[in-house]
Length: 199
Length: 199
DNA sequence: ATATCCCTTCAACGAACGTTGAAACAAGTC
DNA sequence: GACTTGTTTCAACGTTCGTTGAAGGGATAT
Image (cartoon, rainbow over all chains, first blue to last red; front, side, top):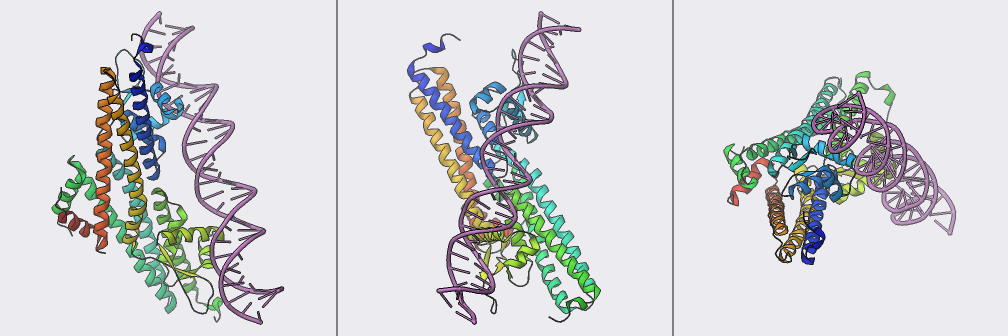
């Protein structure tokens, strides 16, 4: 690396501009991640890797994002569990280097499949348990008409909630299926929907 | 109210069961809300109202959910801004009574339209700003080939991010359109998609 | 074995967030 | 006007959550 300090002025400016652009995008993605209930750093780290032409190691990431090695380590660990990042060996360097999973749609699919599906399934189970209790309440209401009425109403509404959960799960399933063929989400979605015959 | 303590045993049991069912469902919905980045209480309060056959006033809500009047007031205020709850007058009672918006799909639509759309649009704007900076970096790179290469790569990836945001916005638009006709989400979605000719 | 290098783990700190309880406020009622 | 009743606001509190920095562990080279 000969004479970095001798670079023309324009190049250093360009470098800085590129660096700013990277941080700006990282912040944007980080913000979105936060909105969706993830930690901000997940988005930031992923973005920097996604925007880098070559795999990066810990020190570079820490410096660019201004975070400690500890935090980076944790963040990378979580990114790996989502498959958002993988480590690639770089010869001549013992450090672990990382690159971003570039197929974002695949990432979204995995998250939806694991996190959201699990959550909605859990909610559905809870609602169904509540349904069971409400049914028991009706059975044991022993002719108290007011109680019976309330129980019936609640049963109906709980059914609505359950139906909603099931619809949500269906929607998720459609999204996941549509994502299998790595096509554009919109196109694939519409195909998946017409394939299942729009019930 | 004549002799509440004289109610048959079964009725009191049924009452309790109903009460437990309600809380259970409220907790489930609250958990989901939390996952999506809202406050837990929004889901809890809405659910209790949704499961009640008649509008409820503050004291009842506070007691059932075990929260302070202050917190309830704030929560109701936010629920109102989302249109998730509205206050209905109950004659013979000065207290304000509330009922839940029962059309959940309409609620989801409103949230998606306001919160998510705004967020994704913000992200898109940021990415476009980053694109502009990267372009400027290329223009000013004054023949440094390494920098030029990096800039080009980053430009390409930033374009990908921007395209992703735009796809997300399209998807949101489709969802919102599909929700206008208060049909079942899945059916309406598929109709909306085929109507726009699956680009 | 010892030393070096890098990664992970974790206790401790600080900031951010949700929640309370009381005080201010608004709207009737006497 | 004073009093009751119901609602909102807000400072203070406690908890939770993200982050750091240092200690521990695992490789690889000497």
